[in-house]
Amino acid sequence: MDTQSTTLIPKLYVAIDIHKRSWKIHCSTDLFAGKSFSMRPVPEQLFQYGLVP
Image (tube, rainbow, N blue to C red; front, side, top):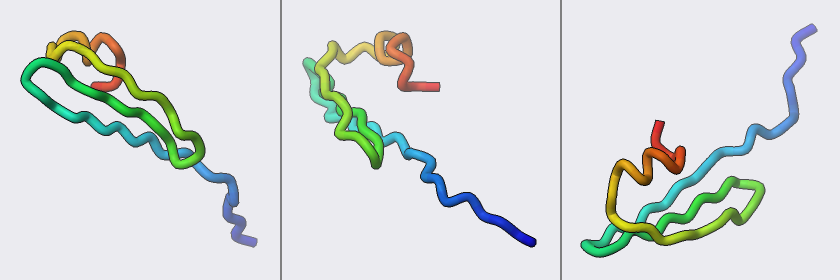
């Protein structure tokens, strides 16, 4: 008998609005609205936040 799981695996969505002086980031899943925040346009800080593998 072949069985299939019916549980959902949430997907992570990350949107980055890039401007010269700041980045606006919104993180959410297909289950939850998530959070938004602004940060300075420094790639190392985004990496430290943990969004970039």
